[in-house]
Length: 341
Image 1 (cartoon, rainbow, N blue to C red):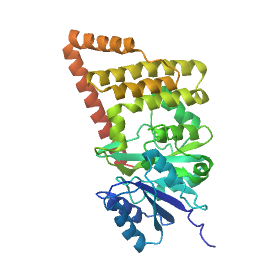
Image 2 (cartoon, one colour; image 1 turned 30 degrees about the vertical axis):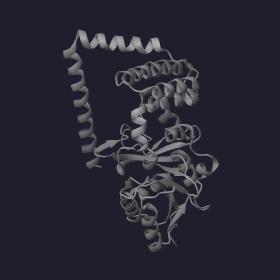
Image 3 (cartoon, rainbow, N blue to C red; image 1 turned 135 degrees about the vertical axis):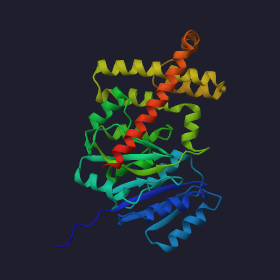
């Protein structure tokens, strides 16, 4: 009897001017223990040699094809464009950004979980972000978590395990159903897509480090960090989807807490002296979820934080050191647990 054939996986790399890293990214796909894949590299009008590098690899392996955009697209728009290139018979889709890479057993382990659980729409895993292990928090083994549970943990406990697009495997039928797949007005569209999918699907997880994400100047993540857009993205998802997973009482409490935390982060921007564009961005994002920006509240939060620091400077410093120490201990514990599995 013939063994069951491996389902086809579409691996997609949107690329714009990433000649320094793209070879490492492509080589990581070629090194996969799982072999039934197609690899589509979507070049967004690069002018640094990225296109030529990708074409050299495509000339050597028929599973690789290079799609060249006729005009430049914004980042999230190009991610959607890349997902539209998947073959009709592919069962799973995997984005790997051009400055990232995946470990050799990434596709094999992720497909294994997805095949074992047909209701799973997304599979995630631990990932390295530079040298830090990320997306931790689910108890071992947790290969299957209901969509309701993982989003309740997200909103109630602030446990985020979806990671980035590089760290996820999507079921292609879901990708095809959603056009566009990513909300192009949201810089954190990957997070929004995950929460949206969990309304009707479940979540799979591999307790191994399977992906590597690079933090570099000029990347979408760096821009997001400078603008502190993550707080806006989290509040947006809570308001848009929270009632699908929470009781009304839970939802109201989460919104109150999230708005409070949002203003805490805005104070950081004020102290850094960020320009008007920063404030216009956050005023707009608050308005989109029906919350009016309050300058008085920003100043009040800043005043309270200043008072705490002035009245008890030693405690403030100690608290910062304790937070850093606890983060280091968590990373060490996570690495130790991964090494034993």
